[in-house]
Image (tube, rainbow, N blue to C red; front, side):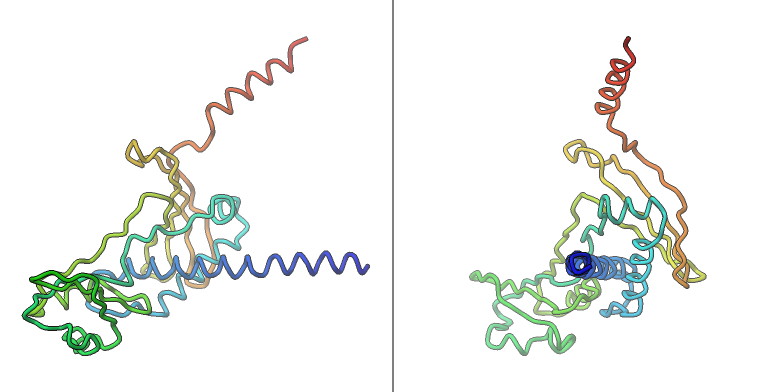
Length: 237
């Protein structure tokens, strides 16, 4: 009995950190997906209620009993590609502005007091500053607001799009989300166009429906051929 208890306790100790790590990944996914949804809105804030509702939807899928849920959440562990910048941008400021005297009091802070300004480069004509935030925000809106400041010559919003697995999300008018998991199956040297997709619907109440899958075939042709000839050999008298 003591041995059984010890094994059970060990199993729980192993599972708890894994569960927290997974939940953390879902939260990061939710931030990225929320940022994509509001990227063209006139606001610097990403609504917390949106982040948490998307996180709940992703966790609901991971806990559902569909085979497809197990495949996308556990077998392939598909998470979002960080394609929308939510943390930083760069600005180029002419030397005549003399911002370097106090980087805690700049025209950036007059618009967005919580942002940080750090010098990353200096030439004879200009400074390059990194603008960053401790929390995820709508950096596209920040960039558009900073671009009209006279002293700023240029605003650079870094693109961080990378080919790979991803999650796409659409809001439903009646509440809830349509969530599509995308698995990269092809060779990126050939364009990264070969993908397999699984689509789910999550209601406002958290009920999950699997809507189907499509895309490239996930079977391994070489393995299938090998198994076929192995079966033929087994059937020989």
